[in-house]
Each structure stands twice: as C-alpha cells, then as structure tokens.
Amino acid sequence: MGPCRRVDRTGVSGTELGKDVRTGSSSRRGSVAVKKIVVGTDASESSFDAVRQASELAAATSAELHIVCVASLAADLALRGVTPLAIPDSFDEEAKQGAAKTVDQALEIAKTAGAKATVHVLDGDASTALMDFCKKNGADLLVVGAHGMNGVGRFLLGSVPNRCSHHAPCSVLIAR
Image (cartoon, rainbow, N blue to C red; front, top):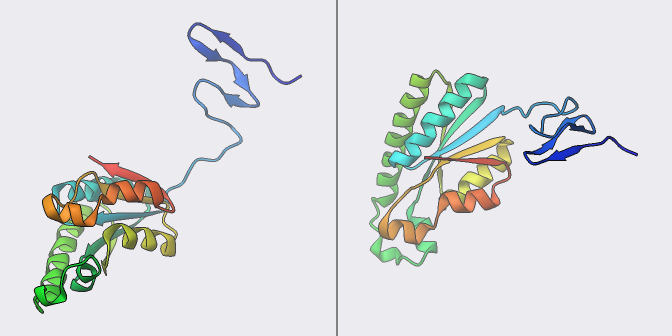
C-alpha cells in the first residue's frame, strides 16, 4: 500500500508521495522560472499597468522583457471589412507614430522599475500578433491589460485578454 493521508474536518493533512498536501509543494519539483516576459501595450491605462507589473517582475527575477505594441495598420482594418477607400493614406504613418510614442512611454515605465527592455512594433491583429511573437520567441509569460480599446474599436478587435488567455502558447497574466 502507498502512503496514508488523513482527512479531518479542516481538510487533508499529511503527505502523499513526497508532496505536502496542504500546500501542494514537492521536493521533487523545481520552481517555475520565468526567463522571458512579453508585455503588450496599446497606450491604454490598463496596458501601462501591465507594463508596470511586467517590468517589476522582470526586474525582480532578472527576466528578459519584451514590450510589444501592435499597430492596427490599414491592411488589418481592410481585412476586417473597412473599405480601403475610406482609409486615408496617412493612416499607416499615424499608426506607426502612435506606436513609437507608446513604446517610448512603456520604456520609461520599465526603466523606472529597474528593468531593461527591448521594444517591438508589430502590425496586424493584436492578440494574434502577441501570441505569434510569444511562440516564435519562446516566451514564458505574456502580460496584458484587462481592458484595452473601448467602444467601436473594441467591438471590431475583440477582447485581446480573453483570446490570449485561451490560446497563448505560454502562461498569461492579466493585469488590473
């Protein structure tokens, strides 16, 4: 027979196969190391909260930090049914300038937290681009804000935190 465990009114106590039943810790398991963190930002307050949390975690664990801003360029909007004639030629340039400003702000947050970060500006659908980036770069953790774009933009783009939490190739932290 295997090891015994005792159950009382307060729950399970004792050990089972070298595992502390109360805490779930085991001497046979190593700790989970977060070595590469990816954080998505879209200039919303929620995404900057995500950058703060990711930066603090990266600084505390000496993890690699990648700040990713996905600019929804004209081609992405065209795929979503927006008539190309309705999209001004300057849209791509404005999106890129906005993304550059966003990553500059995110870098300042990372610097304040004591983390070194690499920035990336990608185009396309935010959740798909973030998940693809995580997969290609072997991320251990993806950090996103709980809320992003509001109103019509949110309706068109869907919920980035929701999609990432269900489909990302790594663990996901949704910052509040």
